[in-house]
Image 1 (spheres, rainbow over the protein chains, first blue to last red):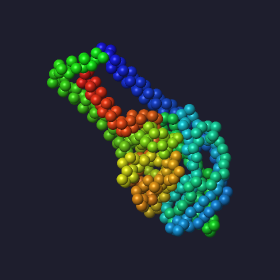
Image 2: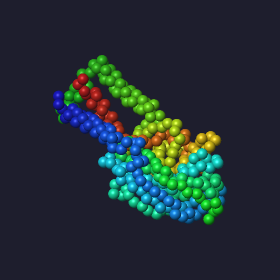
Image 3: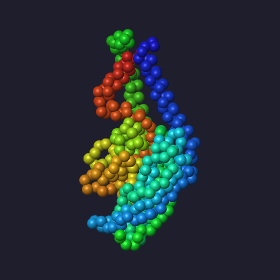
Image 4: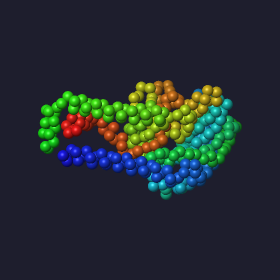
Length: 173
Length: 180
């Protein structure tokens, strides 16, 4: 009755069931770590545009901007036992007559553990700010820091924080 | 290996009703799996509520063999979301992050550009010829949850079909030779 196949079947089923229960419990307990609504209060950050490197109009009529900015952030409190990495990116948000919302990621960074989660750096835009059209002269642009907490297992948490805003120059450089 | 001989014995002494019961229970198992799958499709709003990560373009966040849970609703796509989309002409869906969003005032229509975290370039090269942006209807779902390693079963079964046949054969054999 207790043949090899029967025993193997029982062991495998039990192991899988246990794994599934553990994963479920891990995800459930993770929810107690950081209440979603307070996620943005766990982050402190600052970003300031230092210089507009290039502001021109491309051949196809689209405005293109390249910036240098200072960014400092402290995301240590976002890290828990279940955090695998935090993906951070700084996005420029602005409105134009044609588009209700434009979100352009300027720079992103992956933070792998708590010790690397606090730093300040001066960076240039990784992805150029390109408009769908020629609407950027004198435009007010918001700098919003977004982060995505990616767990070892379970639900991913996304949140953002508005840092500052700046005005693009009235003329191309 | 006495169970092989036992198995052959039970096949030889089969009764119609017994076999029919086995077939019905097999059918029940298959249909309940289907019900669970379709139920998940309804609840999450996405055509494929669970996908397996196949490439390394989102490392170190998602590795090959991880499982992603998807959800889809009518909320507009925003920068930073990890979306799953199909490109015309490619059968494998791509899981990447949205880096640019442009939303029109008048129609509310949204155009997005995506990029894999681990890729140097954005995804324009992956889109269909002449396509510059993705629109809301291209997107199958947003990744909301994640389980590591479990997708390897699917990857092995797809890339080495012999394993699939072996598993199904073994399952079939176990069901037929079961004493009850």
